[in-house]
Length: 147
Image (cartoon, rainbow, N blue to C red; front, side, top):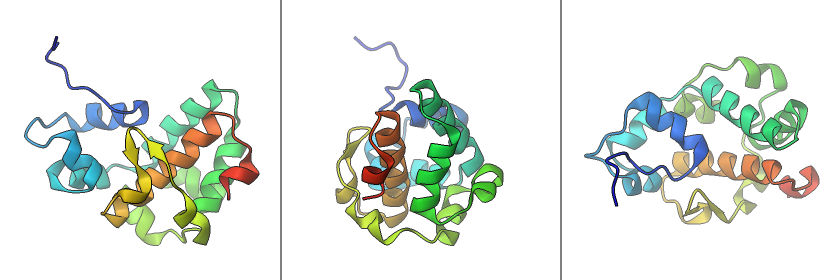
C-alpha cells in the first residue's frame, strides 16, 4: 500500500532527500549507482549539514563527538577544526580529502547498498563515510573501524 511518499533507504539520507526535494524522475537506484540528476544534487550537499546528521546519530547511540571526529579524520585526513567548519559541497570536500589507504578495505552493506560494488568513485567515498559512521553508531571499536 503506497502512501504517495518516497521510501528512504537510510536515515542519514532522509534529510538529504528532504532538503533537495525528492525527484520522482530519478529513482533511488540512480542515486545509489552514482548516476543521474539526483546524484549530482547530492554531490552538491554541504558537508557541515551531513556532519550534524552524523553527530546526532552517534550521540543518540552513546558515542561522542570526539569519537566521530577521530573516525572521520582517519578516513578523510581532515583535522577536527576542518570537520566542524567545512561548508564545502561533498564533491569538493572529497576532492580535497586525503583518504586513508585503508579506505579501500571498507566493505559491506550500508543503506541497502554494497559499498565495494559502487561504480562512481565519489559515491563510493560518500558511502564509505556512511559505513564507518554506521559502525561507530553500532558500537564497533574505533581500532576495528580504522581497519
